[in-house]
Amino acid sequence: MTVSRLAIVDTTLREGEQFAGAHFTTEQKLELIAALDAFGVEYVEMTSPVASPRSEADLRRAVAARPRARILTHTRCRLDDVERALDCGVDGVNVLFATSDVLRRASHGRSLEEIAEIACEVVEHVRRAGREIRFSCEDTFRSDRREILDIYRAVGSCHPDRVGIADTVGIATPRQVEELAAAVRSVVDTDIEFHGHNDTGCAVANALAALEGGATHIDTTILGIGERNGIASLSGLIARVGSLQPEAVEHYRLDLLPSLDARLASILEIPVPFNSPITAPTAFTHKAGMHSNAVLRDPRSYEVLDPTRFGLDRQILRGHRLVGRNAIRDRAGALGIALSEEQISAVTTEIKRLADGGPLDDSQVDALLATWATPA
Ligand code: HCA
Ligand code: CU
Image 1 (cartoon, rainbow, N blue to C red):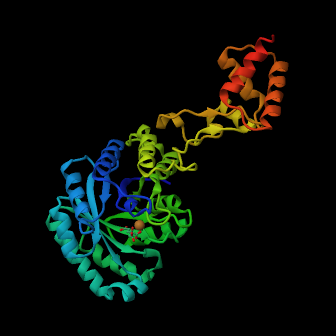
Image 2: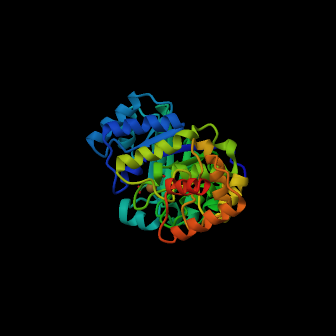
């Protein structure tokens, strides 16, 4: 596949604020915007000014900071909400309308025709103000297919900058996402944004599928935080697209990704998840003998991304019972300790025996190698 265009809409300060463990201070928001801006995301989405007085004040502060990234806010699809957003000076507004049958009945009670009419009014209002506008159907995958395509077609004819597809409950499969993105692509000539939740672990895969279907903008958050267990993580999207098509992500400051994830983790007082793509503490750590052996010869054998692109180093673990002779020989060489093949085998056997009782740290392995080199 080819990603011809990719713009990242980072919503750590909107969707991410909906994460149960998140409450950002003004200073933290400004710091995260500066960090996201340095990384190079194209958009930062912030909580609606309607949400609370502090949300409005922080949005104004963010706009005043004049980052390179465009500042968006996310509001209901209502004239009074977008008016409030425009008054804060945002570069654009992402609006959302519930279109599923159940929400239409239980929430706002509007017909499809009314939704399209209100949406067009809002789109035209924001366009007249010279700002960007995106219209999205909430819970797109549980809405009636024919009905939402009718809405996208109708709203698309009012020329928003983008329409959005939202997998609000994380239920969609990659195939469904690609197919729906392509269907929406066929009824609108605007850009297409995708927002996908991770309830079934498919958020990053679904983001790629959306790009394959013709989406141009992907919503991410740092570490993937959001409602419930969140949405596609920034590092996940970068890993996914960057392994397929490195040039599609090379305009971002990839070396800043680890510190971005680490900073949010420290703000939230959680560790960077052990399985985070790229930024997990062990994302480039090799353990088993066979893996370490191959990686020492050619890192590409077990690494689909080069850690140096992210300012990271690979690690080879040696103080464990799965260690192999090649990893031990390599370490002895790095320490300038000359050992025969018999000695390498013997010290490897000894490490395995000792490590059966629990892992050894690097200094214990090094000490053992030194003992072997200079027997008393
Ligand atoms: C929510 C809304 C949303 C909106 C996504 C979008 C979702 O918090 O309920 O506007 O694209 O997941 O549907 O985050
Ligand atoms: Cu969401």
